[in-house]
Length: 370
Image 1 (cartoon, one colour):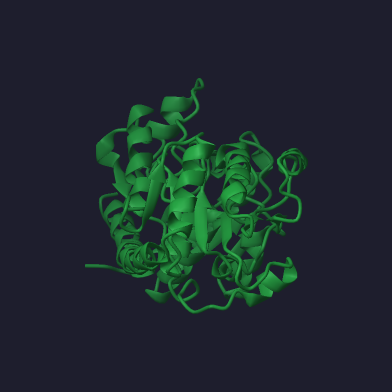
Image 2 (cartoon, rainbow, N blue to C red):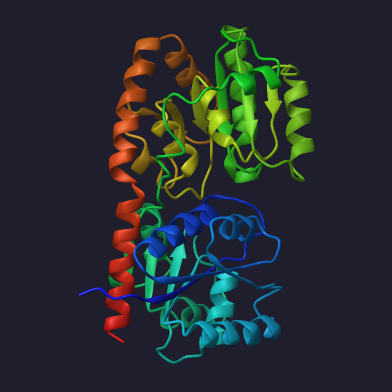
């Protein structure tokens, strides 16, 4: 029997990424099911703004480090004020703050969600923090679960629950004309894009090198790099210039309207070299009927069925990436079939309803077994 729970989601991210999006969609889904859900995140963060706009309960909390006693005290007050029964942490820093705030007792229950396949960091309090200090784990993919088990987390404490897809937002038929116009891309030019922050492990340098190879065979092609410009932007921009991509590779910076960026693409690429769980940057274009090419890292194969919804290639291999892109560019019927297959696949596998139901069931069990 289910009952209304008092739940707190805590995330320390200031920008906007898949982890923050997961918190937002999950919180909305839990509210719709009658639960009292509180979102704790840094003041002025993208999550704070978007959650507030959605009418969710938001408690701003600055978290300056794992020994931030002020944050611990503030979180204790939040837990008491909202009579929280279960905390779900979504990053290592807020997990530590939540652990100190609740103490080593059994209440509130503490769930840790892991969104990446990087191994847990080894340190003196590692076992206390990640094993004895956690009542339950949510892994965002089977690959994340494997990484947690390899890091010493007992498998029977881990539930694989995929991050949800907002199928209402990412759908076929959205026009991408405005993006093409904004960046001077002809209406009939093929566009190959990648979405994600400009981080080294996202493989943007491989994407750029592959773009140069594609351009040799398809000189009419254009390329989109859709991600927040940061300290790596200058290095990537110089590489693009050296490879003759000026005017053909367009860095868009962060886009809150990422769906129209996808809509402008002929093919979406993920060139990541490590770390991926089941990335939104693959689920979202597939939901819009756009075929994908992805490196076989982390949980990418859990999103992309090779040869059915897209193509999987080895990481760190620009020639292989270029070859796969050209294969799809040369075969429009294959692109169309893969897009149709991908749309059905991700809508069935990654629905908000499934994610919320499975998460709710885990919460209910942990609170009931307390």
